[in-house]
Length: 382
Image 1 (cartoon, rainbow, N blue to C red):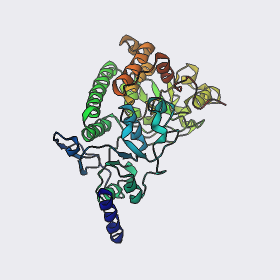
Image 2 (image 1 turned 30 degrees about the vertical axis):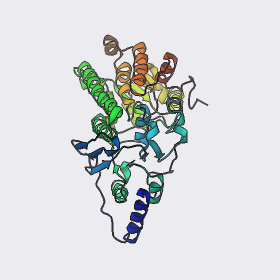
Image 3 (image 1 turned 60 degrees about the vertical axis):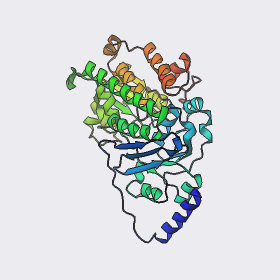
Image 4 (image 1 turned 180 degrees about the vertical axis):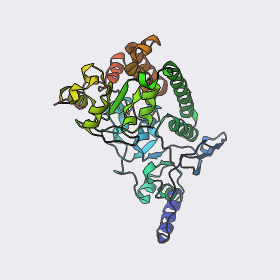
């Protein structure tokens, strides 16, 4: 009956398609507003949240089936042990479901994928989800409201830095409830504590005394692809006592030039992504790049990834904070007890706490070194 009602609504929407749909702006709700009503029967649970677009959404009943159309949020479900809730994804490729994800959640490769971020309303209905998490790029088109109009709750939990992640995970926790909410509350508290502590350790360092840190995304040997300032990248670099090179290039720059990097001559270069080992090799061997101070002083670093890249978004970004201090200010890190051994402990503790999965120390060290669970490089140097 529920599905029939949704199909009927689709027919009505199709008839009315000549009328334009009002576009929703991409804004963030400053304070996640939540109301919740719970009875003894969890199927009667009702939650009303204000999502990151400022839209108020009410969700009735227990959430058992979620379609996630924003790949950056996919890893969060696996990390908190909620992979069984995912019944549909925008994409299901090795870039999204990597070897670490498959280790932690073997069924991840079997989750159906739509092959895009805005499947048809009919496709959504056929999956019969309890909730849809939309891609932020579809907000202005009114896509989330189209889904709500057929009786399926849809929310936007967009994030780009630590502050917005805290808001997003507060909303997601309220929506999911139970043990998932407890884990996300714990994560938010851990993030706040960890950021505060390393910022206290580095706040005395003037900009002039901070090493300039250039981040390359690890897009094969394309070393000029970076990430803009005023993002999570500049956040962890500067919290850990570095100066983000993107601020010297223009704050919205994602593609720079070799000449610009050579002029800046960074003190540290961090290679992210699955191509990180290829990028590191290119830095060490390419003319011009190998003459940079970061290369000559052996201050090129690969960056770990688990279900998702630590340096980007998601719950595993909590691990990036200590790792960043270890890379950027090693003496301060050592004085604070942050060593390679402590980072390995950090990795095993993290997955025990949030994923209920016990990694071996060897596996944890492999992750720390930007490798797959078996110790191999995902994309090796040719």
